[in-house]
Amino acid sequence: MASIDLNDPNFDHQPYDPSVSYARAKQANVLFAVELDKRAQAHGVRAYSLHPGAIAVTDLGRDISEEGFRALGVYDEEGNFRHDPYNGYKTLGEGASTTVWCATSPKLADIGGVYCEDTEVARIDQAWQGFKSDKFEMTKGVTAEAVNGEKAQQLWTLSEQLTGITFTVA
Image 1 (cartoon, rainbow, N blue to C red):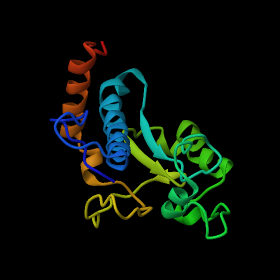
Image 2 (image 1 turned 135 degrees about the vertical axis):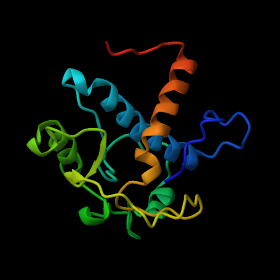
Image 3 (image 1 turned 120 degrees about the vertical axis):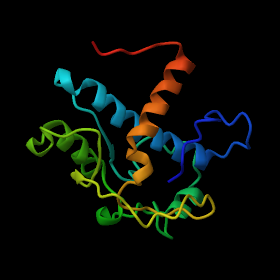
Image 4 (image 1 turned 90 degrees about the vertical axis):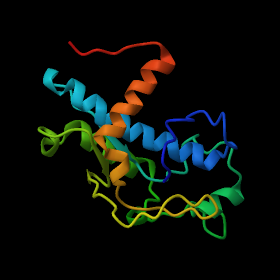
């Protein structure tokens, strides 16, 4: 949903926007999995990132108002959870299915560093036009930028610099 800014990951030089921050953190998660997979696959470790869907019964939205959830499309006009799995509005069980699939699917035995959704490897979204914080849209797929190996390596290096910890797979 948004491009991580490797030159200003902590919003030190730009106004903080919670929506942009969340979107950048999601892209960082995808990029991290790409680089972890590259570094660890020789040791039989594969890494994946995934989107479980919008699941209203978790505590992740504890600071979002009911109006905010409506704006995100999670609740309908009557305040009821919008159950629409095809468009990403899922129950807890439906959301968990992609995580379980990533951990157990023989289809993923020889691949890693991929982004998954709806119990499948997500397609690359070529139509993505960039994040618009004034209009939330649940989308399918992953941006090419979010699975870019060079950007993943740059984020890994920045993470090591910021934490002071170097993770070397021997």
